Length: 363
Image (cartoon, rainbow, N blue to C red; front, side, top):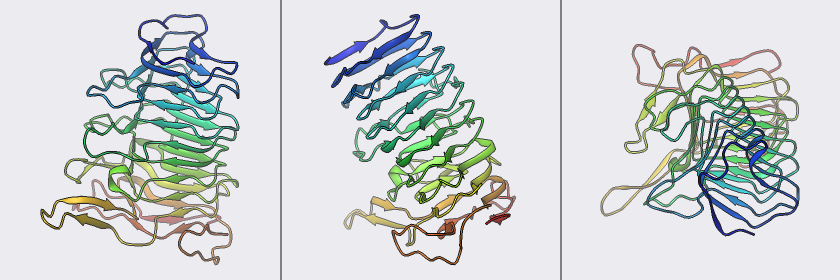
């Protein structure tokens, strides 16, 4: 096992992978640097026994050095082993997904990543999806769980990829939070993905968003697709809450950056997907310091949807809608929309949804 090993300048222009962790290599910590212009890809962790490896900066520093995976002829990073941690990865301009995780794996953690942007923050698309989980991945996370208020790590930013921002394909129990999709790192411009912001295909038990405002998910930049698309008869039991679709929250003022017609649909549930929940019951709550009145924490339950060219929500599938739910239960039939907000103070309707909710077909 390696300790804090720098990859800086040492893994460029190879005929295979820039870095290959294989055949049971475990408990390695590969730190900052770059892996550029390699034939198979930037970095691969292969073999089910190659576990407990960490890639990218793992401990807080004053600066934000990223491990750059760029311009490779395959994916930026490929993972085929459980218990892998990717942090401060910058994957851009690769001829594949920015990060691909495949197999019956668990406990994959990705956070503070920049996908589709080069080291200057300039858009540099990957020729696939930003992050792609497939083939049985379970019990894994994209985005941080806990963030200290001071000197916090940056949010995961995903934009400009040819396909989707995040693609969950035949997976389960994936958590996504503390992530922005489809917008530039500093929120000054759109960075559209070619497909959907988050695409769930035959995937179940996943959660998108957080009940804490600081950790919420923001999704824009899917003009040819949906902020979130749920598709397939095996797509059930997923929950979306504490998520903003169609605008990005200003982290300093709690106002929003709005973009007109940024998604075709805010959320699209189709092709047999059932038993999914949009919004949690309860009210928005902000706790304040009793002496200074400064906000301490904000708790979110709703999904805020604006700027959809066609509709905030399009429902085209679901089973028996008469089945009811209680708090924290998974619906046994229909999809449930129970707490959304589509209001925007815009007299010119520039940032409004064309239609709030559409029920169509098999909804």
